[in-house]
Image (cartoon, rainbow, N blue to C red):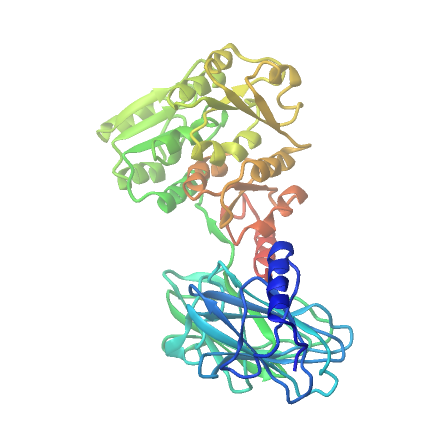
Amino acid sequence: MRKILSILGMITMLLVSVCTGGTVKASTVQGDTLENAEPINLDHEYEGTLESTEDVDFYRFTLDKTGNTVIQFNRVEGATWDVEITDENGDPYTHFSTRYHSGVTGAEEVNIGLPAGEYFIKVSTDYHKSPGVPYTFMVQQTQNDYYEKEFNDKMEAASSMQLNKTYKGHIQTYDDKDYFTFTLDRTERIAFSIERDNEGSWNALLVDENGKEYVNLDTDVHFAEYGPDVERLELPAGTYYVRLENNWGTPNMPYAFKVQELTDRIQGAKRYDTAVEISKQGFKTSDTVVLVSGNDFPDALAGGPLAYYHNAPILLTDKEKLPIATWREVQRLKAKNVIILGGEGAVSNQVVDELEYLDISVKRIGGDNRYETAAYVAKEIPSTKAVVANGKNFPDALAVAPYASKNSIPILLTEKASLPDATKKALAGKANTIIVGAAGAVSESIENQLPSPVRYGGINRYETAKLIVENLALGKNTGYVATGKNFPDALAGSVLAAKNNSPILLVSDNSIPSPTKSLLMGYSYYMVWGGPGAVTDNVVKELDANLIQIK
């Protein structure tokens, strides 16, 4: 039996543990049967010792809610313990053994989905070197749902899963099977990936609800080979099942896998068509459309926050004629109002006439130059803040557009070394400003004229965009990817990004710059704006390679 402590001593140890986070030694006169299992708390480390290979220690714990339960058990070279998690009748939910191979250290960790209720831990050993060696363990419950929910050993009892999330579990015995299920509502490119382990192997089967097989994979088991085994494929809409079972040597070892949506594109034959496809992704209908020149960026840079403020998409037009794709999208949206950004030099009155012919009300916001146009747009958005960006280039303003749009902050434009009068007037009454771009884009003399300025500026457009993403944080589910070398795709997409609380990640046309690459691990899905002429397939392949990693 374990070392006997007095009741007073046990209470003292518990108080010390609560106060200091230290290890609690297991108590004493009880714990050798299921009936007198020793009660333990979540999130506390406990220590015990088996006196012989016949000795058994029992513990019990209570879960107040359903969740992913994690059991961490220490590994010691030269010793091993068998651990069962059971119900009140002693029927096991899961079983594992700690590994004792040379050089193995740290904790054995097992994830299992358990509903609220009372559970028991049974610790035993049949290895003659284990008695007398202290073991330590901890039971925790995590906040996510990404785990195997027992008992899922049949297709009809499959654990529901989400795409793009890593799921953990383990095969309890050689004949155990774990089933998971997910549904696609459209045809998608996906990757099935499962982590490799040089001490075991799993068989992974992916089938549809009719039993049609799409993946039948035995994980590679070559020594010192790391990373996931991956199968890439295209799946039609439907319900699917993943079955995991032992291939060899795997029982009691944790697995990790996921079904990952691969990088998608929103694209059209031309920039006007891409803007239309982005609009279709974000809007079923819209009373209002913001219309900007698809050929030049100055008047359009301030459009993102205005469009988001009106819950409207941004569409592109030629100067003299409304493209047919844009015309059809305005009709599909059932738009009643169009706001044109820029004067007649950007979008002619001929475009206005075409829209009015469709019985659409047209409002033009345009000044004598880009600075005035941005200032007039700012008047439409009530805010005590403003973003200030260089008006002679587009990347910095586009990188900040999702954040500015989401937070209803207008974007004002400036020269590098002088603050235009229109911008000065628009800043009246503003309490705070965000400068995007380094001093080479917006000088320090400009900064000194702004109210409570905070600057985010790097050595180039990609470094600046990285600083914006890191410091003006949005969500982490989707990263929208656009070329940093042209403006239309990122401009049209800025509203969709804001609606989905997501940033724009700028890339080069054929590569991912280092600043952007450093951000990639934070996202579970990427959507590229534009076709291969804007963002090549080489970039998509690099994005996919990041997605399939088991995180």
